Image (tube, rainbow, N blue to C red):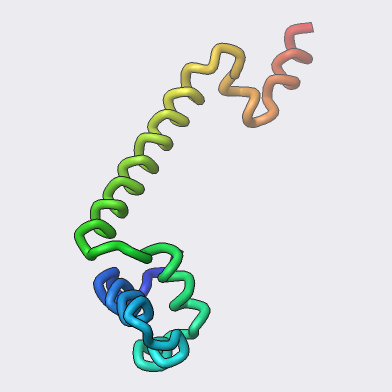
Length: 98
């Protein structure tokens, strides 16, 4: 994922200008992005303050970490999964046992 050249504070400031009544095209021209980007920011940050956006970002990062840890734990404890199954070596071993 590419890094944004605008901070969350700049994005929220642009959204607040739109909410105050300015046109999306004018705000977008001033910030240096397309009006579609402004609308995407509005859907993501609409009605938020900077502190709320930072808290939401921390929560998303924590949730992603929890999900990855859970997935890692499940993949290592799955009872029917063999480590050789992932590499296709299970069939080779079966043939050599016969």
